[in-house]
Length: 189
Image (cartoon, rainbow, N blue to C red; front, side, top):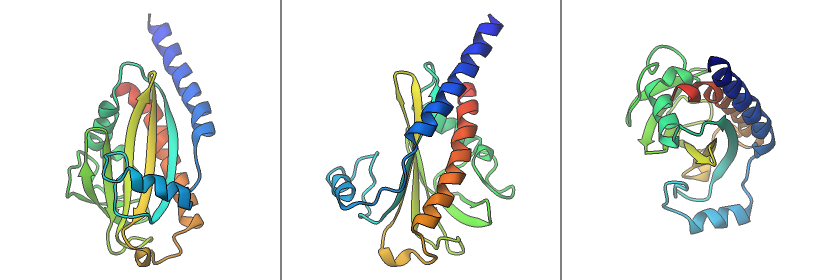
């Protein structure tokens, strides 16, 4: 029985890695994309501060048929050391209003925590400037879990350090590490 469980875990991680490589999407900021976002404005899936989207990435987290998206979100917000944090400030459980420092000494605040998502916003001193919102949404389809990371600014002028393709690619690398961590830790959720 133990071998079967271990084999299923390895298969899910491998399958999740393969699908994650296929499903990762680059920055999506086209006018058509922004128009579709405006139509869905206000839903949990699509926050609605405007159309100043910086990036959106989708990652497959693997096959976890007995785990809900809420379980994965809850695991991450209750064990925030899984997230790329620096220092010891937010290594345990985080709630709305908590302030943390991400890798590279980039201060953020936990802006919202929902059933299947949580959202942070950058604070003054962050390398991308303050006011960048980043939402981490968790979903499941046929037992396969997914992480979607979306980032946007309320105002175009908020972006202070060339936050275009370069910051989007840097974010892709950081969130890829997070998704790789969640592919394994979701088994414990």
